[in-house]
Length: 402
Image 1 (cartoon, rainbow, N blue to C red):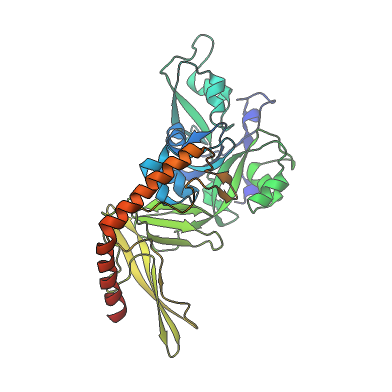
Image 2 (image 1 turned 90 degrees about the vertical axis):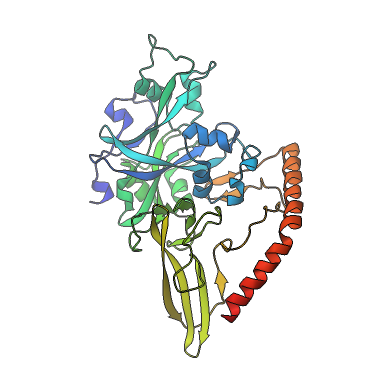
């Protein structure tokens, strides 16, 4: 069924909210399945990474991966030093189940603090939920006011639409319209069309207003045709995801909608990352010159079951070799030294289609981070240099002479 033939309603039409309230698309559903959806979260005030993760009950590693942020920042010592300023935009992954006949996430909870009001709680979620929605879901009213310590359910918008947009793999993101934005400007930012946004959101006219919540279709990479064992992934363009117990990192795009999976390099306990019968690890590509052109061998991820990771060696030919390289971040057999501090501030902004995030303008915080990184660098050089040189020499000999 095409998108424009599907049945759409808005909160105001259902009578849940008065007609003067902002609109939000609702996807009717009957099944018990769920999908991965995204929230476009515009921070109403400066927040640190753990605060955002706690606010939405999302893993920090998932936030970093969804926004293609450097995984060096997964070190806990950095988490409380990074301040995302007000109006930063983050993509937040959430599970989107079928609840009471519609797609809606009710998995986020908020513990009421002494100075809270329903309005202030709603404001902290950046327009993704209204005070009236929080009151309705939790039965808050004049005779049943907020109580300090009470746990509130925060209803958040989401959409699945079968993870498809006219037959193409798609992940849907709930986006709060800002003042000055239009369907035309949003279509340009997210690589879609005005007519597609109208169709997805069931709009009768090409007009939106500040506070409206749109479902934005994000082109995605899917594992549907990759012959994976016991696993299915769909990753929006420009994002990545950790899988196989955080041993494997799969990214999508940004230019080619094909999943590219490699060893994450985050854990030392990962095993079975090497393709059988070769010296290649998952994500490695080896090219060999021949009289007829170039033979290409690729170690490909094939899914996982528990802690068992599947892989296979894929061989192909091409006209010309482009060089021999390895795409995974670190050989699993290498001893990993403490990470060296980057040459620039670890808070440098991330600029992409989602906006600028991760900027810290506090000189004191940057100085602390620089000193901490310098200490780690010195320790790494003292403790690991000799061992790593020996290991690299051994691997060089094995790789090129066997």
